[in-house]
Image (cartoon, rainbow, N blue to C red; front, side, top):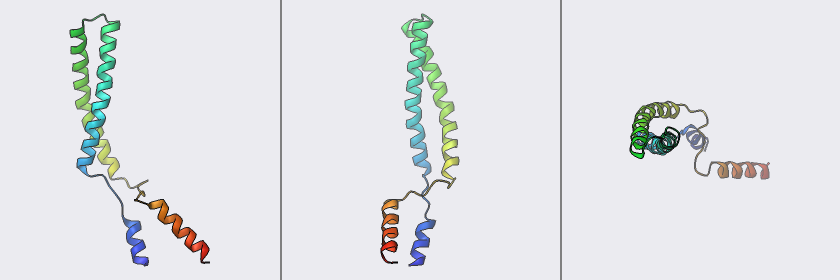
Length: 108
């Protein structure tokens, strides 16, 4: 039994590179969409640009921002996937621990 508990404690879950990449892309799509909307509104309302000019400005900035921040976030995500701090969550983690605690308390 002690060997089973030791193996369970040593299990550390990490994100796969594919999961990190998918998280990176979906996050950037949402963030770049928000940036596109903000630049479009600013360009159209405050700079009095035409709709075509506003779409061009917003598109250029959103594409540039998307590419640069995609790479930065992916590197950041991969660095954090190698850090074990705070990685203790497993399925039914708290339920198992509570059951063990209650069992030990009842059988003292």
